[in-house]
Amino acid sequence: MRYSASKPNFDALEPEAQPSQPEDTPSPEREADPRVVRDHSLSALARLQRGVVSKDQMLELGFDGPAIHRRLGRTLFEFGPTVYAVGHLGISRRGRGIGALLHAGDEAALSHDSAARIWGLVENPGEGPVHVSVMNRSDIADMTGVVIHRPRNLTAEEIVGHRGFRVTTPERTVTDHMRTKTVAELTRMLELMVTTLNRSPDDLHRWSRELGTLAGKAKLHRAMDEIAGPAVIRSEFETLFRSVCQEGGLPGALTNYRMGRWELDAAWIELKVAVELDSYKFHGGRWAFHRDRRKGVALSRMGFELVRLSWPQLKHDPAAVIDAISNALERGRLRRLGAAAAAAGLAL
Image (cartoon, rainbow, N blue to C red; front, side):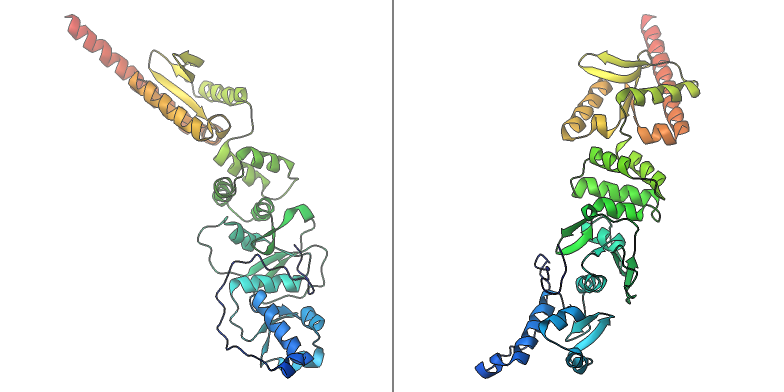
């Protein structure tokens, strides 16, 4: 999707209320006047582009420099170095985005906070400047209310058309935020990509592995761990679990222990404590969600206490994992002693 003076492409924009204007029905003589035709073309283009046009577009419509100058302050207002507002300066945020793209040129795209807003990767976005990215254009003048980014690399594959705009892809948008966002903020952006943009955790893992050495990449990997766990095979997950248990001095557990129709990731059978190692890769999806809940109910009916652990917990907070399992095992011992005492009392 290209933004050019001769072929503007804003037809996919969502409808937006426009200021009501009286209908001007020119006479046939006026309709034939090239100046009237030119003015009507300008009005139609401004309506299509939410009230803004570029100087190049006006020149292509037949306006010369003096004609543009005569309209300034009357029906034309400077909105940027190369962009004008037609009729009034009450330009909406959508119009500001179009104006920024017209100013930055055909290869520019909305990016950073503006792209995150368009993709729905931020909640309750506040007002702020419009962000655009464009490569190899050091000649673009600054524009009030617009932040112009000049990345060293921005491929054609990282720019798409969405809601009528040229905009960076969701993945590129997150990449542009890696350096400035916290792990929690990146985690939420990734969660929204999964829940609203139909990206699977496996898709995100493949994308993150292909990224080069970039500032903030460690934060992105931490955020990936938070939403999906790592792209590791099951044995690696279990190896980390055993390592944490050994370092914490916990008694050895049976792993992959089958009890009837259910397989327990780890269990201390005599103390009736079981552990489930939860990862989207192994437990993701609607069917798996309900299967795990049925399994939990079945274990509870058999008197087991179930401890659920995720990869981020094992990797980043092993002390809390050790405490949780230790406490569960202690409760198991107390239950066992209570059961033994009760049995002894009945025997007497």
